[in-house]
Length: 321
Image (cartoon, rainbow, N blue to C red; front, side, top):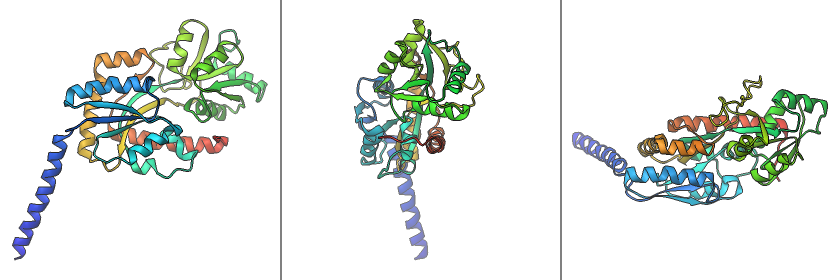
């Protein structure tokens, strides 16, 4: 009798394991959706469609890109958390994913309820100034700010954005105080610094690159660990003696309950798509540096960024309206 029960349990256990393996092997059997936290038609839309097309060709299923923008990524995150944890719904996120817990009261915990799938790209923040401003380096900017506390102005695309937090970290590490001018997007920031109405700007690389190449703006630094391939002559903040890096990153995440076998399969497919020469070339041409890597490495990076920004936001008293 005991032997019969034991054999029965073994058969059930084997069946469960076999069915789990079979479901992973059969994945995907229907379209995969990439949910954007940002509006359609922008850089993240282009990036996801480019990668999605390659994945679709490989797996034989459509990869659809859908925008659910709003509330600093929270709308898209809440939507994905309401979907089945089967790997068919993937969420694209950026720095706000790590910053939001320090700024908002939320009815979910992304750190516990989401896990990394793949780090897609890095886009370094660029600190720039008008070529006629007289500021030729980060040292010049710091010197000016120390001589005129609170008077030196800089613009970003909004309060608590990654570019704003970059400047707050710079201020914290150098002991300076500057006046933040939050604007609605990269384009208005460029207009203000080109018109010499603000001293400096902190933008993502794609927004500032054309103006630097045209000789209208001077790139003082990139806030990335290494120099940007698109601005090889612009030193990093680290090279200029300020030990900080605040890359704007984008990655795909899924619900924590998605089986590891499916995560591994998706990770392999997205990595292969990202490694395609035409994909890499296109992303680099618009200021994005392809990254890739394991799902676990993205999860670690998200958690580390959350801790880093929590300390910065508390130290600087940063709040959103």
